Length: 262
Ligand code: LIP
Image (cartoon, rainbow, N blue to C red; front, side, top):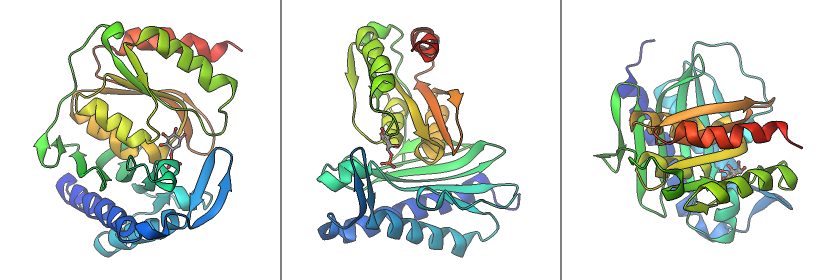
């Protein structure tokens, strides 16, 4: 590849920042939705900020295709690498005015993230990492926590938006029983960055998408954490467990058998 990880990270960070800044510049359009459903919102600014991120990437690196949440139905050509964009992760939060959302951009090769950035403009947080640079939050190195006892762990989770009935709650019940406290904050990339920064011990979700985790998982791994895809489904959907690494096996032990229970 002709780009260094540092160069790819600079592009990812710029694209994530520009996507987030586009949203901030248009906060007065928070009610402009393309569709509203019981468990989801498709927002006009999602589409626009993906276009902003795409234009930023293509200006600096026209060589690889781009998988974006808003265009995920378009098949991508075979290529040695691909960019992955989630223009607004936490769209439902954003729609309601909750500042807990972010823009996420990563580049992947062979399923592995090489560089990624997660920008939460209303929280003033920019998380970044590449395969040969450390995980940073606002330029300062971050590391995972050392809590090894699940009963002292803060565990973030979320309700799979394609099934917020039985399945998600089965896992939530188990997490509630294991953890010191469970948190459902509604933006997977930020949940994972919280684990990376040592502000939580784990994040699990039974149905999440590649664009939600592509950048954050690298940030977590570079901060000393562990990310494991517990199940893979079609259309870029998966069940994912991310932890501070020391607690990983004990949480997996509790959650993994639940996939096979009705
Ligand atoms: C959302 C997540 C949220 C999760 C939903 C969804 P979107 O992403 O980050 O935490 O529970 O399943 O995927 O749709 O806001 O980009």
